[in-house]
Length: 172
Picture 1 (spheres, one colour):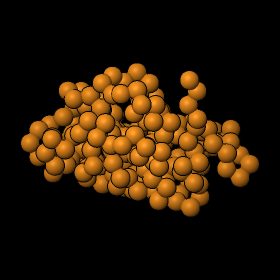
Picture 2 (cartoon, helix red, strand yellow):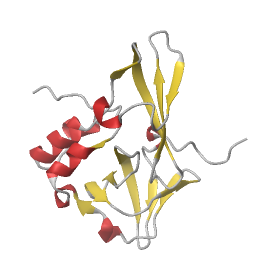
Picture 3 (cartoon, rainbow, N blue to C red):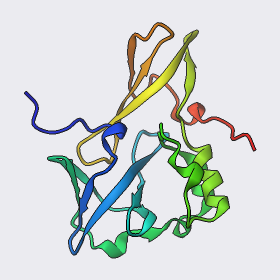
Picture 4 (cartoon, rainbow, N blue to C red):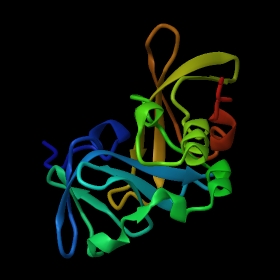
């Protein structure tokens, strides 16, 4: 039996983040993934600080997140140029950023536009994205878990789908 939790987006909610100088309780943690399936940064929605940008390394083990970085490395989201969100995606099945506070509207809109929750077409079949699986250090996306119209599981890996094409336009 496996001791570690799965490294999936749906497991990145309500976790403690143990940093070098503090412990932070998170609501959600969102790795942002580029076209090469790498994670250049993460957004940590922390109870005390609100949503923060984190560019360091996180490790998920024993039901908690760990980083050797100090809590000062949790930066305001505005530290990231808003245009940078055009080149990444994330999976937020809860659409947490729809009602997020403390973040400028321009960044909220850019983050919402990068959410790949929903459906996508692949080789003539419509799939509903169910989850993302990451490596243990949350630095790369390993697979996309989806379900077809009759709820059969499907898994997609790098080269199977173009991540940036899974983005959905935001309706205002």
